[in-house]
Amino acid sequence: MTSIANGDDAGYPEFNQLKTLESLTVALARSVLALQTELNPQNFDYVDITTNEDDKTITITWKDVPVDIQGNVVNYFSDDGFTSTSSDYPFNQSNRLAAAIEVFRFQHKLEIDTVYNNAEQPETKINYTLDSNSDIGSNPLTFSGSATLPISIVLNGGISQTEGKEYLDGSI
Image (spheres, rainbow, N blue to C red):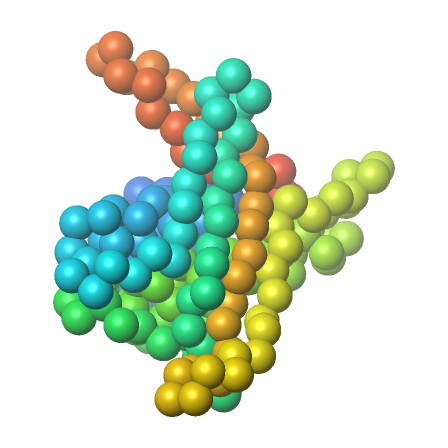
């Protein structure tokens, strides 16, 4: 399990009840999906999520997220209600979209590290690219990525609930 150290400066306050990086990655992606669905007059469409309860997987697809020349996610959502922290990377982002992308990228970084992914046949579930954008007046880069991650499913009062399932080792 890739556990997250809880404390005042660890993780993001809105998600402090989550104990693993895997569950935080899923929860942040879902929170961006809710934001783009509910508070999005500009019709930004950065994330798609598909849950397959039969296979116990969730597929998160990020597409064309704007990134500046320094590699920082550019947030065009006017007010995302996100509370940031003064913690270390990846928990130091100032908006919901950047937090979701950086936690996603950080989880991939741990996937390729044998300290955290010491399976007999380690595999990565997350893939992403930073692409050059040639549109004049646009941000110079775009982030795109996808992941099919394992989920845990619980029945809570007759309602099916899912969260990211641990598959990495260690703590951060």
